Amino acid sequence: MAKIKTLYTCSACGGQTSKWQGQCPHCREWNTLIETIAEKNRLGAASDLTAGQVLNLSEVEAQDAPRASTGLTEFDRVLGGGLVPGGVVLLGGDPGIGKSTLLLQALSSMSACQQVLYVSGEESAQQVALRARRLTLDVATVNLLAEIKLEVMHRVLAERHFDVVVIDSIQTIYTEALQSAPGSVAQVRECAARLTRFAKASGTSVILVGHVTKEGALAGPRVLEHMVDTVLYFEGDTHSAFRLIRAFKNRFGAVNELGVFAMTEKGLREVSNPSALFLSHHGGQVAGSCVMVTQEGSRPLLVEIQALVDEAHAPNPRRLSVGLEQNRLAMLLAVLHRHAGIPCFDQDIFINAVGGVKITEPGADLAVLLAIVSSLKNRALPEKMVVFGEIGLAGEVRPVQRGQERMKEAAKLGFTQAVVPKANQPKQAIEGLEVIAVERVDEAVNCLR
Image (cartoon, rainbow, N blue to C red; front, side):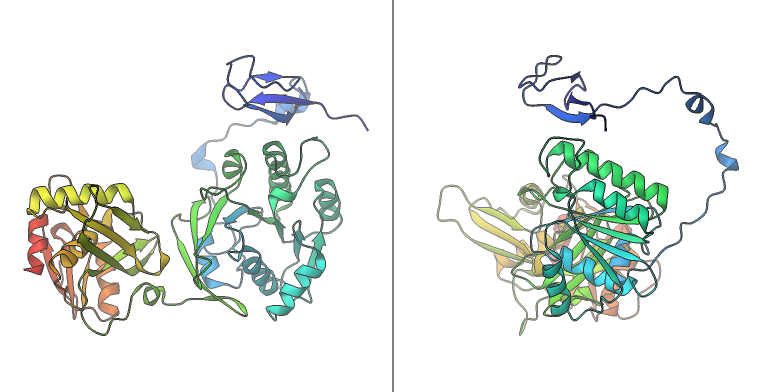
């Protein structure tokens, strides 16, 4: 067998060299040369010259891709309805968060009507069997392959047809074509590219498990996320029982969808009413607590925002936010001082989103601001009040998307008052819900006076 030729490509400028060097000879950047396989030049081949065909886009018949349910409703929601034949899904998350447990449960459910294969690169066959026994799963028809060599996997996949293949994890797989160690940038990129080509050619759904760095991003080259069709992140505190799956990329469905699970002794259990997870149960009204309605994809969620404002005992007051953006908190405090006349420059301020949920949308601004004022004045908001709205630098309360759906969700859960932007005021009254529409920050603060 002829030896496969490798080159070293600069990740900064794209220049190539036959030997590794510490500095790129083209752009003079350091430590940017990555080992890659040299592609064969087949430009003169007759098949390449005749294969291209230009089509009119209006004449192309677009068909919805058939979906295969994973047996887990929350997982299907994030995927956009289920797995697509030939689709490649990348699932990332912290170690021990439950990625392998989730996929083993899904394969156990799908094995009743499909041919499935679980490729374990991190654990032995005995360890996987022990997990299945601990979860009391029916794995009689689940196929298992404990292997990390890509060429062996290709031979097995060529001999038998599988509908769904799980690779756990992509960082442990290596190919003999490269000399670098498993998990290196070159190995991860090459193995993922070959598995993606196999999925498209055979129509097999492939799920890749990916490790994450200490910053929370997927380990390996950034091109890994571009190659796959769907990118999912498995989030959650290891000290908490709740787990969240978010979709950050989906070529076959909507992004920013959210799936909620609870970790139990028997594996992951779906949570049908996730709003109940993010609401505290106080004995009475508590100052510094405000309930907001956030939008996660197509699902409105009620989340409690807690604020604690205390006199600072150091020259530099502390500003700490958990589950919310730190820089946005500083902006809201400046708006509160300038447009509502409430200074907080001598106060320590702590903000927390209950339940470990991470809120990135600006619709949480008004809830954060009212929670701060409530704690500062030691005056509780009405118990059955919900709030949402974006705050502008001029002190205006800006509308958010899907305001009608947020208010209906709040009314369904028994809330009787809603402080919303005036532009989100419903044209028709919502039964059981009193809507207070505000245009300015000072109008919203007056709810506490």
